[in-house]
Length: 466
Image 1 (cartoon, rainbow, N blue to C red):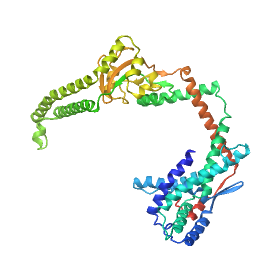
Image 2 (image 1 turned 90 degrees about the vertical axis):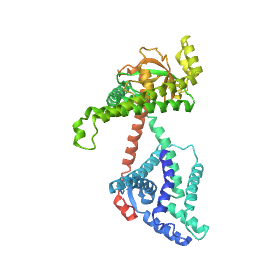
Image 3 (image 1 turned 135 degrees about the vertical axis):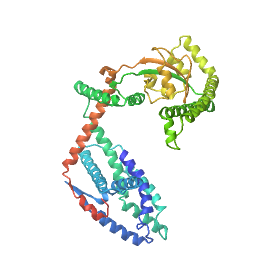
Image 4 (image 1 turned 120 degrees about the horizontal axis):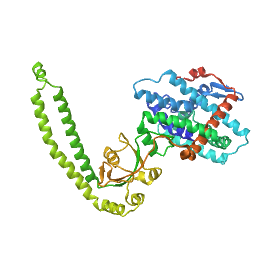
């Protein structure tokens, strides 16, 4: 039902844009009879056939909801970039809208041919559709003009009708969604298993793809691993770490961050001055008033160096205060680790990082290398400073997230991951992909079997801008 929900959510946006920008031709009708006449004219226009197939036709009214919502949305995107929506994009939107209707018709035909049934009754679907239609009608009523409630109601219905929304359309939208779900499950069940050859082929393909991706962007490996993706190839230089995160009070931790940022800023300014001095000559000063002499630059360097010591002391003091504020907890962690208690057990008892409390990270740890960008630099430095597997931070590491006691959990072997290590996950993914591909192939065949003939040029007579 994803497409169904998209339609419903987009409608409010479409209505708002129409009423704000269209000149309100549709709502500037204050008599019920005039609204009815307008509806007849719109109905005649929207009866234009934009496609035909064995056993039926597709009219502008059928495709209008999909087209209107997508066209309105894309128009806003283009407008935000200061350009108008081009003809090629508008035509593509129209083609997609027609294709969606033909798919629904093909699904309905195949659904019936297979003798499938829905769990919901027609009355239940009708009730859902009527409720959805009423919700949109109530929204349209807030904007519709009219000199009476009856006239406003007629104009509100006219707004919806002009965009292709009718009670019958709503019913078919819900029914089509439910039919598609049942039919898709029935078709996908035709693919019962993945053969050893198919699994090997999927493994080889993914291994090659992962190698290409992670060789070019190693940090993507960290993200994918953290998100539990199936990985068939690993880059070099990674280790797995676990950690006990203890979070101090916000103001205590912020004081460390502020002090470090002030020191970093001063060090960057000093580096810039030293670079300026290295490239400066007294000849530059004589050549123009804007150039500074080496003596002037050196004076600024000396002054900036003098600032560093108190800034460094401020960092030391803030870090000491931060560690002191959580010393009762870090001391307890170290006592348990020194007594030989398992790191995972201590992490479970004291750790405050949600990522370490859920799989796969709870088991595998985080993957970190010297060039990692997914982690706080201080966390990365602390993780890479550990010499041997099994080592843990003897002094807590402070990052912007809090105080860490990090364990060097394991080395991460580089290169191809053995198939047996990813077999179960890759099997499930491959089966799902094969089923989806099978359904898509069948759906394309059902649509082709309708022998559709397109009359998209007729859309211009609808008043659309495709």
